[in-house]
Every structure is written in structure tokens, then in C-alpha cells.
Image (cartoon, rainbow, N blue to C red; front, side):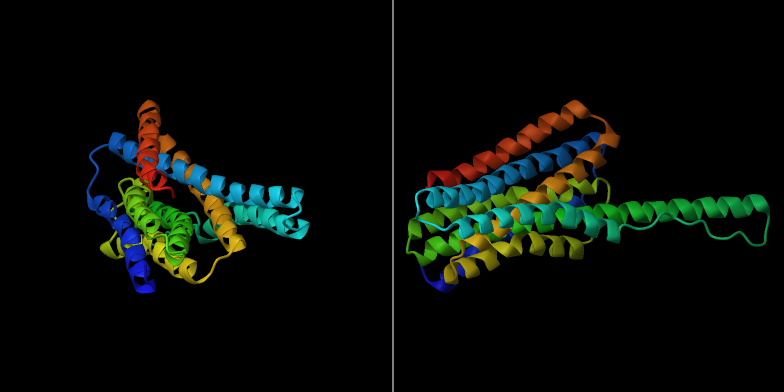
Length: 287
């Protein structure tokens, strides 16, 4: 498979993330639907967390096994261990710090000057509620972009697998990987829009979110075709795992205020199984 074909098909695999994103433009009718969609997204994210961490830990285990047999050095195994721990910490604590810096400050009531006291108080309350609504909308959109970034790091590793297999001449494996990742990425759009609730994003926001989440498949296929690096692959697995765990906690906490706990847990299971089934296409091809 040529380099041009590889990057074109890698871009196609990433583009399917846009399939689920337009649903965010629809007005959900009830809190039940908000919880259902968000927890379905958590199920997809839970699978991604298991997937990336198992791959990352597998790379480290291979290095430790190689050291025990005298095939690799202790320094190499130690480097991979540091990359796994440091990348995971960066994905969790790093995102938390960035989110804290970007979080809007609490609304400040405007000073009351002139007019009747009751009218001034009413105006201040309206302004305060408006500021709170704007802050909640901004926070929801930031959470969605954080999820897109976490998914993007996961998808970069997927792109690496596509590029490496294509470069090695394993065309059938590369093709199955592309088809499997395309199906799998189609469900990841729900992971981005799930936490938005009743916030209706712009088409521009959806375009940016899809590019952040799906674009790294294309970038990863380019890098994987030209560069083979276990430390690079492990670093992205660790970053993705930490970031995904962080956003799962954010979404879960945000959905608790809506109730419908049993429905949420059912939809979490559904999301997990849908992600597993789409990933089986890759497993069937030996990926």
C-alpha cells in the first residue's frame, strides 16, 4: 500500500467521527434523553480507557520480559515505565489544571446605582442568572473539547497502527484496521456531544471538535508509515488513558444532577458493548 493510499484511508477512518456529531444540534426533549446519550458516551469512553491502557501496559510488560531474558536493557524498561506513569499523570492532572485555569469565575453582580431599589435588585438577579447560564454553556463546551482531545490521542495511536501495518506491506491487515477504526470512530462522536446536555453548539464548534478527535488518525497514519517508535506509541497511550479517565469523571459528575441512575447505568453498558462490537472487526482481522 502506497504512502498516498495510506494517508487517504487514514483520513477516511478519522472522518467517520462526524457521523454522530450533528445530533448535538437537535434539542433533546427531556432529562432522560440527556442522561441516556451522555452515559452511552461514558460507555464508549470506558472501552477506550481499557483499550489504550491495556496496549500501554502490554508494551511495558514486553520490555520487562525482555529485560528478564537479557534482550533489552534496564534503562529501556525504566524509560517506558516513566513514560507510562508520567503520561497518565499528565492526562489526568494536566487536564484538570488546564480546565481549572479556563473555568469562568463566579458571576459578580453589577453595582446598583440609581433607580428604585427593587428594580436594581431585579436587574442584578437577571444579570447574575445570565452570567451563570453563559458560564454553564462555556463549561459544557470545554468539557466536550476535552473529550475530543482525549479521543484524539487515542486515535493517534490507532493511526500509528494503520501506518505501521501499511508500511510493512500487510495490506489486508491495514485494510481491516481502517474499516474497523472507521466503524469504531463513528461511535466516538457520541462521546464528544454526550455531556453537552441542552447546550446547542455551533456548526463551527462541531467542525473543530471533529477535527480534534478524528484528525489524529490521519496524523498517526503519516507518522506510523515513516517512523516506528515504541516510546512514542506508549506516551500517547498513557496520555490518552489519563485524559479519558478524567473526562469520564467529569461527565459522570455532571449527569448526577439529572437523576435517572438506572437508565444511565444501562446506557453505559450499551455504549461499552457497541464499542466492543465495533472493535471486534479489528480483532477479526488480526489487528
